[in-house]
Length: 135
Image (tube, rainbow, N blue to C red; front, side, top):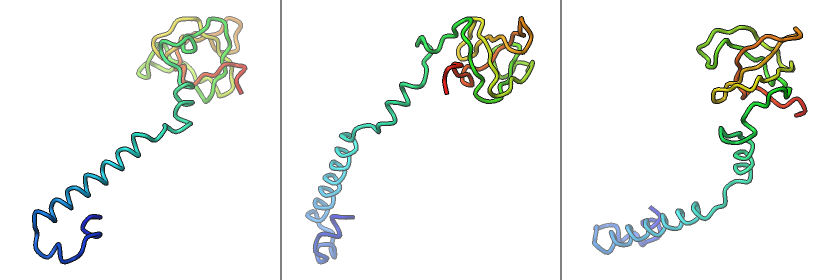
């Protein structure tokens, strides 16, 4: 389109090989410039920091530490087994503190929760837990 706009109008009254070559060459050149600009652009600054903040299954930050206290980020469904299909035992309110037992299945941690001295045991998604010292 840009090649057609930048060339004299009388070139486009009758299609010719020359006009087709100019259109094709201009399209290829514009595409190459755009591709080079996109490929050479550095990734956004926030993308690197987001990847560093996301815990991985193999990272030490992802594994539950028995006895370490975690704060519930939002109301948390505590379940009888790992997975969203398991029965809900209780809801731990946002801000309450839970303690992992050390067992985990992927992102699901077995936790000790509640006000009782021994605490009840259930499973919760680690995505809703923060270290107690975190803001």
